[in-house]
Structure formats: structure tokens, C-alpha cells
Image 1 (cartoon, one colour):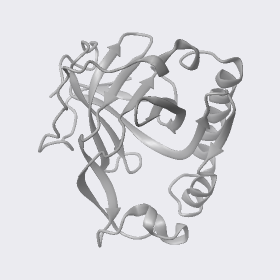
Image 2: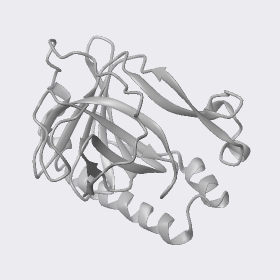
Image 3: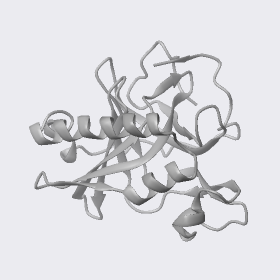
Image 4: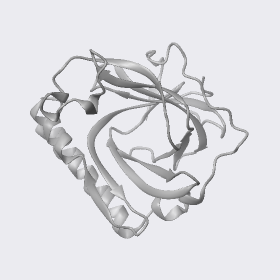
Length: 221
């Protein structure tokens, strides 16, 4: 899986992995095989197709993470589960160095639903894909250009549970306001018409390799 390396750009149609660590230096707990739509010095765009086999976090007893009360969601032991992405696919857009990526969601029949700003560590490129760390706080952006913060309760609980210190939390909020500035000015990628994009129907659904959590040989930003 994957073509090229961290210093190169993947060609459209390449299959790579989009992964998240639990926190800095920890194991990977989210892995999503995706197809490269565009990759250049300005933007990485990837498509996660419906039915893609992914890895997601669960509690050690198999309980879905969001089925656990918020007060204990981040303190109980966890494991990972291979599962499939059900529902419509997701287009993910990330600019090099940004501490957030933008995801596009559609309703069945390709009715555009919303943009979703996922606050995260800037993507680290390696030979098989990109890695990051989710920062809990998110922003929903709607077709009428209105926006709202999401998951502020999870963001606060992650801090109380010791998953991020005050300095990181401040940087995450600052990154969020940077994203809001782009939303308010309706800059890229919101203004680029990605909501009208459609995947190539000939693209196969990428597979999840057995070594999905392998350690990268080389990493770059």
C-alpha cells in the first residue's frame, strides 16, 4: 500500500493510510485506507470510500467509545477493532503544516451535508501515508457558511483526564480560531468547490493491510 515516500507526492489513485495516534508517541488507534485525489505542495486530498475496512478505538470490553459516559470515556482501558465505514464516503483535505484538516460529508444521493474541521496535529508524511493526533475539538461548517464549535465537552474532558495540558489546549483553540478566520473570509478549501467533486467510479476500495500499525521508516511534515 502506498507509493512514493514522505519527500515525494503520491499520484491520484494511489492508496495510502490516514492514521491517528492515541496521543504523542502512543500506539495508533485509528487507521483509514484512502485513495489519493490530489497531492501537491499546496494540498493533500483523499477519498474514503463507503465500505472501507478501518480500525477504530473501542473500550477494552468492546463497548463503543461514544457509548461510554463522558466522565469515564477517557479513563477506561481501550482496545481497537477492525470495522467498516458504513454510510456515505468522506473527502478529506489537508494543507501542509495546518493543525486541522477539512472533511466533506454528503447525504445519500450526493446531497452535500457539511464541511467538518477536524483539529489535529499537522500531518506527518511517511512512505505509506500520513499520521496525526486528534485534538478532540472540531468545527461544523454548513452550506449557508454558518459554523459552530463541536465536541467542546470532549475537549474539556480530555484536559481533565490529562490527555492534553494547558499549553496544548491553548494551541488547539488557537488553531481553531485560525480555521474560523478562513471560514469567515470564505477562503480555501471552502471556496474551491470541492462539494461538487465526485470520485472516479473505477477506483477500487483500498484494503486494510495486516501491518496497518507499522512504525514508519521515514517521516516528514
